[in-house]
Image: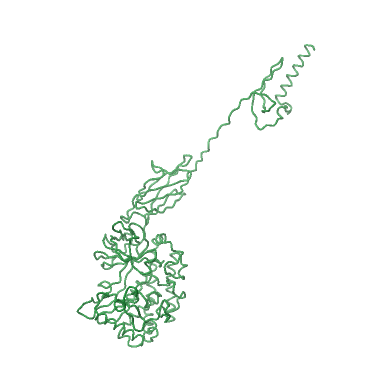
Amino acid sequence: MTKRTITAITALVTALLAFSACGGNNSTSSIDTVSQPEATTASTTQTSASTSVSTTVTTTTSATTSATTTTTEPETEEPPVIEEYCGELLSFVATTPNGTKLKYKIDEEDSTVYCDATYNANYASPYELKFASVTAEAENGTCIFGDTETTAKLDLNDEQTFIVEDINGQTKEYTVITEQTHGLLPIINITLADDKDVDDIKRNKTTEMTISIDCTNAPEYSHGLSMASGTIRGRGNSTWKWDKKPYKIKLDEKAEVLGLPANKDWILLANYADKSLMRCTLAYSMGKVMDNFDWVPTQYPVDLFINGEYQGVYSIGEHMETGKNRVNITEQSEESAECGYLLEVGGADSDYTTKGVDYFHADSDLLNFITFNYPSPKNITDEQKEHIMSWVQGADDAIVAKEGLEEYIDIDSFCDWIIIQELTNNTDSAFRRSCFLTKDVGGLLKMGPIWDFDLAFGNLVVDNSHYDSWTIIGSYDEDAYVQASWGNYLMKNESFRARLRERWFEVRDELLQTAMDTIDYYGEKIYPSQVENFQVWDIWDIKAGYSSWSNYKANTYELQLQYLKDFLNDRADWIDENI
């Protein structure tokens, strides 16, 4: 082979190698046709006996190819910064010094936490909102109160702020606003002595206490009650068995309560079965329209706290007792065989009392368990006992005979009492219990004072759901809830019935107007407090106590008030047609 031939071959090989490295004419080298999952950039040196060529190629690793490679790690991406993102506030729990948790709501739109301290402040002083310990949690973020994370103390009297910081360092500032709104009722504060709590209050045993009444948000009352000492105990019969308990208060010194005449004895009704929270208040307001009662008790709705713990909406009012500002009858004197008397029908329990000592029956069995309320069984003399028993028996005989009534009973007071019982459909009374009569020296037997209406106005389970019968006309069935009584005979006495009819149309419109005005007035006053009451006593969807099925579906406060109005209007229409 000549030198010229060798040179030509070498030039041809060099040209072919250069052409292959550049991928000319879209051709692909045989090494590129091997398919492997990973590709690397490598520098490859090829050597011939007479020529050296350096090129850069894309190659793959295979078992049959030998190459020297250098690998570079990919760069790590930085997380994107989300300008508008911030940890979402999940909870905000504020706890007062007495351990009560405040309600709250979070408005993310305006970054505000509204804290409701309406009934949950520390009631050492009823309207003084103090510091609250706060715990807050956020999703994907941290809550920061100044230099403290997660927990802090906030002054509920001032507007406060805190910050939520998310995982990207973005921050969102929240404003804490304490809504210092209160109910519209007087607030009663009772503190039990000797570290006693509510469960330590017993029905037949007194517990020492102090009491105050704050009327800051109820200016219609002339004044409340400064701190006073006294005792508290349970009261009621069936009502004491229910979850929300009624109480009796006895002050050490006489005091006015919400403008009512000074006295030591007061009662707190729980209104557990009465979801309107005003039935007794309403009935007594209506009773004051009637001018044939010597005295009608007063009940005012209040918010009750015991040891700083909210107990719900109660009614405070006057206890049934004799006295200058209560049932004002002649005081007992051992020198006279006659005095003033206060009797209660159905007020005795045969298991604990004795006939002839504590109570008596009328011969007709139309009036039973007539209790000596005043003078009390232990104080009444034999002559006084004989006098009042003889008088009641004379009235019993006259009512059964349907003649001579005016010699024994005050007909006008009987008419007024029956009208109130019938319009309110007070089945629980109806000459069977909570039915009071009085007789003063030289006077006739009078009906009243009216009493106990929490199960009236269509709120008793044994009622006729259509309310189209007379409440005071009972059954001769010994198992009936309302048995035959004086009412059966009085309603069949044409002379008495004529006077009752006349009196009904005299007072009907005023009674109804008074009732509607009272429902509207106290409905507005009670409304903020009833929200709190039914959070403590969650009974909207249950038939509480002995309440009626007809009232069961009225499961909001608005429906309860409407139920009262509808009941009274329907009942009045029925009386118009049947009296």
